Amino acid sequence: MKEILKKLKSGKITVKEAETLLEKSSFDRLKLKFVDKLARLDIYRQDRAGIPEVILAEGKKPTWAVKLIIEMTKAQGRAIVTRVDSALVKKIKKSIPRGFTIKVYNEAHMVVVKKRRYKVVGTGGKIGLIAAGTSDIGVAEEARVFAQEMGCEVLYGYDVGIAGVHRVLEPLKEMLSNDVDVIIVVAGMDAVLPITVKGLVHLPVIGVPTSVGYGIGAGGIAPLLTMLQSCSPGLAVVNIDNGFGAGALASLIANRAAKFRKNKRRRIWL
Image (cartoon, rainbow, N blue to C red; front, top):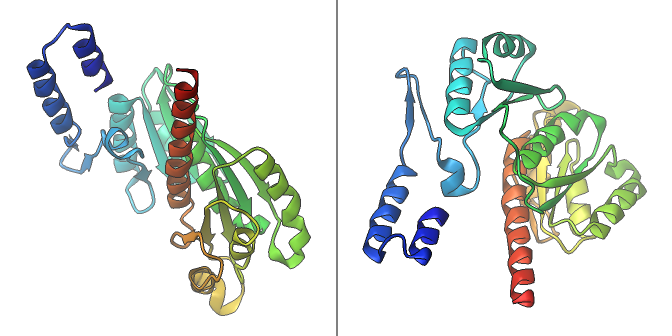
């Protein structure tokens, strides 16, 4: 779209030609890439919605997952894969073509495959990320890795749960002093931490309930209900163990805020 507008501004194309090209561009963004009658990859999702299609490996046959990863990387230069196990990692490493690179994030159970020249451009968006306990780190890492792939800077503090409320103060101080745009809080058990954090900061907070805990709360239902019943307004809640979902939402907020700051600076200088 930017290229079309540049050509219009420079006089290389007419208004009518620009209109035709923009209509075609809009249609192209809705096209899907069919893969062996197996899947329909939404390869233009990031252009359209701000978040790329991510491949969920869980529940897929390894051969299917690898095929989708290769096709997505060919089409867009990068494939982000969640819920990956060690067996699939080995298969990906053996199967990816020359010219591709693979980055494995063990704690997050994620893999990112890229063409060698593909680079993530920093947006200026800043995200704070807090995990209540060390058992919550895997979900938190899923959020962190995805947010970084969205060009965001992520400041994080782990093992700062509500059992010792003073533990969260130092990480929060650092995040606020670095002017983060949004804070993700990952917690299981009683899951009071995101409610407490929202009561201390002037930022939107995203709560991620985890399936960590004893007894009836171990499936994540108790943490989910606790967060949904928050008396601290400004707390949004994603599904149980959904680090990816939290990272996606936080990235949209942070990147939008960064874009606003950038445009504001331009207006000041102009």
